[in-house]
Length: 374
Image (cartoon, rainbow, N blue to C red; front, side, top):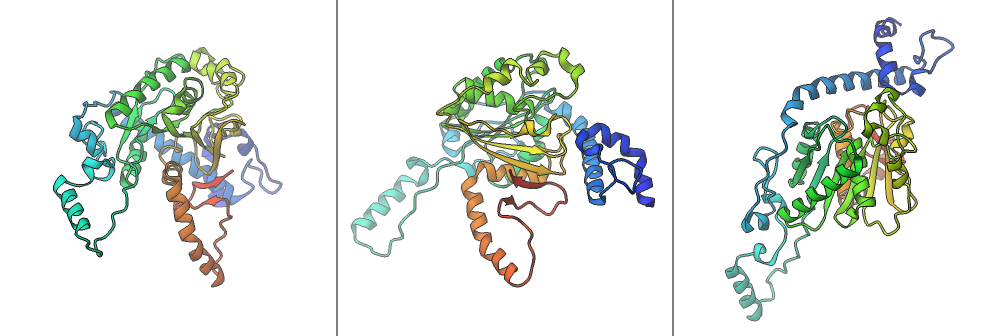
């Protein structure tokens, strides 16, 4: 009870930062609202503290992301080895992402030697398996009044797991139209594909960035260039948060029933892009919460519910980063789950209760941030 009383001074902050449906909960044996379940209380307070900490850290990093990334046009050698021409220090590395090409797989002398040994009839010469195709570049697109600095940790996570061709794009904070921003995104993606020698890209969009990317894919023919679009806390059906912000035209476009939202609800038969939408049960900017889900009859969609993570934490949280990596490499994720199945069965037989349902995406042991395909 002493702990409960100590937390009471910050409850008004929680009520402002977190969804009303959670902060209005009450209990018959506690007079303070939404303190009915200790676990729920801890989750709310952790999420609030994490949001405040991330906001403070982001304000420090924000100036570093104002300037657009410098990108040098690579030569033929750079393109062959998969470099993107970004400024050094952003995590790009050519070694792990070299696109497969006949000229890059082996030196000419090695090819001649292999052909000679094959013609000589050496039966023990090992057969070379074809190299897998390189993963497409990843494009990161920030949210409203933000910049690329929000993706510092996510970018590092992707690079540590082999996704080195990553580019973060900035759009102007003065942008007043989602359609114009989507057209600009399309031009950027064409440049990225030309520079990287790739046919398609993957996009990760946070909040408004996901809506801009979706408009590009659905309404501007971007499905020919985008393989997978991952959205984080994106108001796919519009959000009613902060009515006083309607003075900004792009905020009005994010309202339910706006012309842009209605366009995105139109038929989109034949769309070739796969959509993965992460939405949180503690996202204070999504009103209602389910507006961050993407449900469209013509789109290939997957909705992943995140537990105990607020809006600002979505592009930062390690569990969400794990889910994003698996969304961008679904074959690797399936292989990982198949490999883990016998181990889980063995643990269950030995009496270890895993408690993870078949539709749950295993997350790192980091407390909050459980992911569930919903």
